Amino acid sequence: MREVPAHDRWIRRVIATPDGARIISIADDMQVKVWDSVSAEPIQAFTDHALETPHNFPSMLYAAACSPDGKWLATGDKTGHVAIWDLASLEKVGQVEAPVMYTWDPTQRRHSIGGIRGLAFSPDGARLAVGGIGTIANIDHLDGKSRVEVFNWQAGTRAFELEDEKRKGIVEQFAWLSGGTVLLCAGGDHKGFLNFYDMSSGELLHQDGNDGHIHGFVVDEREENLYLACHNRVEKWTLAAPTQDSAPAMP
Image (cartoon, rainbow, N blue to C red; front, top):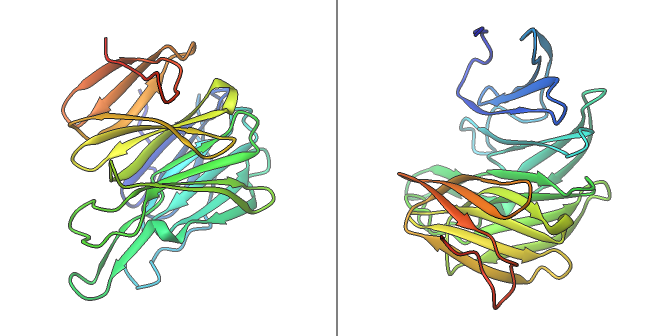
């Protein structure tokens, strides 16, 4: 094991490139850092994310994701700004904005909440799913609608804006299923949710959940089993075809 000094503030995410050659870390110093996975030597540090929110409070850099082919990296911050980077040159090649996922309360708390919490490229790398929470009335609680925005990021266009208030809270993570035709998102407030969306129409195919916030999940390679990291436990679900009449079910 080797330890290296990495960031000046709280590290929010550490991911590996699909080939395992590099490690990417992001933190509240708003820096994106790329490391050699074998030597642990730093390769490059860069950012397109402001240290402060528009209301002059410290921002946070929450989310990062690589495209499946290892060509692109996306990073997302508290104010809803997403930057896309070329992983070969480590240069910025695009950006998208999701400002609805940032809520500022100028009266009760003079504080903000929200931000980009989930990012995922489609299997072909052409679309980018961005997840968080919609506008929040009371920032002391996660009472906003779960919110997903899907972008054709190279064109800078938004394909879908998807919100749900039946099961509210933050979208923490995505998985593109069935070759990219279905988008699974998970998260929650004090309860957890699993939402399955049709990526041709934006239709909510199925919704499920439990009584604990879902912080993250893993889908096996055959897309048969789903493992959830919940608030105080781990759950295993069995995936069925996500339609209106068939749903994931716990074994």
